[in-house]
Image (cartoon, rainbow, N blue to C red; front, side):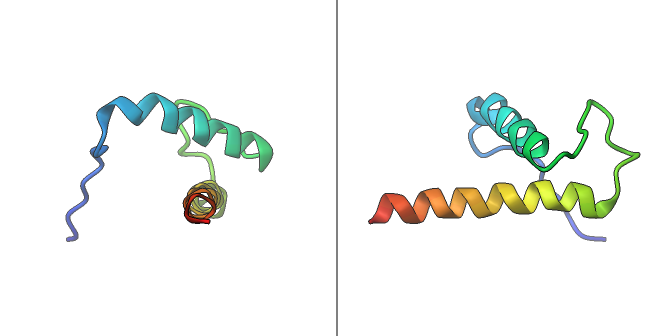
Length: 64
């Protein structure tokens, strides 16, 4: 069984990450709530994938 660490490296960023997640979910028309067990893996994965994509883009833009 793989070990998972769900702790944020910067605990103060939790609120901002949740807000970002909700913004992305709304744009992708994924109905996130407090309980997301009814969502498909594809729906959940699309939100996480888009979040990572945007974070990488923002980082790369900062390097320019």
